Length: 165
Image 1 (tube, helix red, strand yellow):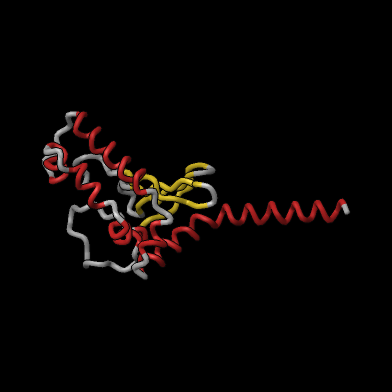
Image 2 (cartoon, rainbow, N blue to C red; image 1 turned 135 degrees about the vertical axis):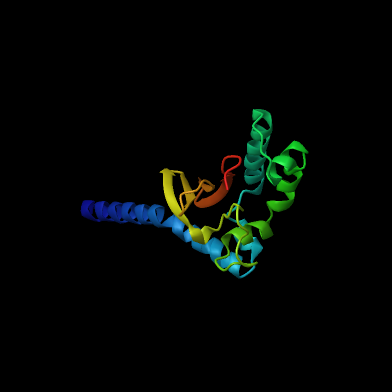
């Protein structure tokens, strides 16, 4: 009886470890499949929209308050107070679909544009309840996922520093 209990505990530990190791890739594959199938409901199960919007707005406010000058479009939008409203408009199920669909939806990105495409990113474990997707080319721009219950949720998009292309 004792051996059976030990065996069951060992099986449960191996299963939990396997789930934990594979779950980020499983979540990302689910998001990719949903994006390509245009199933925004399934995709939205993995996105905490209020948290993503709040993280982007926080970064944009910090840029505005830092006094650093950015002569690009983002700088003009931040200075004009329009950027936060655009975040609300852009961080939608359709906006997330653009990030997670493997095939380009509108051709190649424009030169100098920050391209956050999940298919061009690598998974990096940050802690037991957090992983990030970082760009393969080493440029800044990160998608941050946190474990919420038994599901990985996109909670932040970290923008690259101002002026960086």
